[in-house]
Amino acid sequence: MVSLLVFIKSVCPLLIAAQSPYNLVPNYSFEYDSVCTNFNLYSPSPLWYSTSSATVGGNMSGCFSSCTPNPCCGVPINIYSEGYQYARTGNSYGNEFFIHQNRRGYLQSQLTSPLIAGQCYYAEFFVNLVNSASLLVNNVSMLVSVNAVSQGHTYLPIIANAQIEQYGNPIVKIDTLYWTKIAAIFVAQGGEKYVTIGNFKSDANTDTASSNIPFSYRDAQYNIDDVSVMAIDQDRFRLEADAGPDTTVAPGDSVFIGTLLGGTITTTWYDSSGNTIGTNVPGLYVSPTVSTYYVLEQSMCTYTSRDTVYVTVGALPVHLLSFTAKLSQSLILLQWHVEAEQNFSHYEIERSTNGRIFNKIGVRKAEGKREYDYIDNVELAGREIYYRLKLIEKDGKFEYTPVRHVKTSSEAFLKIFPNPAPNGVITIESNNESTAPQTITITDIVGKTLLSKDGWKGKTLQLQLPDVHGVYAITVTNTMTSQRQTAKLIIP
Image (cartoon, rainbow, N blue to C red; front, side, top):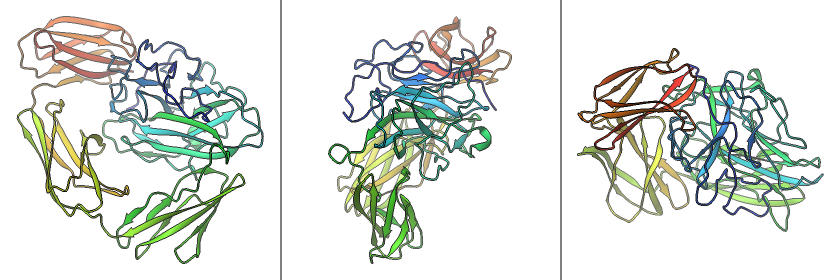
């Protein structure tokens, strides 16, 4: 089901945290000030802004930040994208639609200095799929231009040939936990001083794939963080060959080595015998039968470098004997038994509410023990909760355990239906057993109160909302215990 999502038009003000002195992108991490004050979703910023001047129909770009107490747009939890996501760095990140009903969101910033003609530059940014997106897309790219580009008073696509995208322009993989790097090298024409992130192709020229996320919306929406543009200079910033991290592959399987670095690049791949196995590609798949290594030779911008990647054929040096998850009073206890922790680093504990999308919630360092445990004080009442472990070696190789699940106690839940609510008539249902009166507050995406009702004591309540459209947060607060339940409401 497609929804009209109302979002913010202006993005993020001043950056206080330090950044690379060679990065020409101001406020590369979409930060607010160091003490996280003066958060205002409608405050215009000279550093990042939307390319659209439209004021109706739902803005397509914006920013999430821990600066706001509003549950719509917080970090790590935000109702707007039904997500739980930490920033890659800092406390904030950008967000936009790369496809949504032939609409686009674009984030734009002016570089600290114009680019020099004939100079090689390296550019990158990181993306992360929001938890409510149903689509994955290609054309996740960044345009570097002399003049600022604009959508005018629309959200229609800007058609252009962006310089920065992954090699081969593939559909960007699904990953709602970790950040995916989009990077390329390019030669400046001279005078370029604006960067714009978005999808610069029409719907007909955009490839899509389903994310298989349950109850998601028909769009491709990604978070954005850590944007960089840097001149490649042997004395200041070199772009060394990157054959990828050392890895492990099971016998008979293939594994990808290298990167998806885009742009013009000259490469030669060699096997351990010195035979050429690939040219002019930043990465490729290999299927070794025995543990071996591969060498990447890269020539770029008058600079040549080499890198080696080792591929081990076999399994990780840790043996998982058991992994369990069980409810203990109001907590969930995870326990696992292992042996043979050789060259092993740590365990990452991951949680999911649908069995598909997992978020990291904790870490346990390898201590040479046979038994480990982790207590999750989860507040997702009445839900099936899923867990898995990520087993990580010291050299970065990893694998996942089987998934375990447990049903939490149903002490409190909040349901809104229908949702989306096309005519503004909704029913609120709660199984909170308390007899204390409760306060219902409905706020829009900037925290403005749309409706407030005190003294509700029943299990269900029907409300007729004003004639509005957009995304709203419904909060039910127990006046005696101050317990809060929050849900998202969409009025198309």
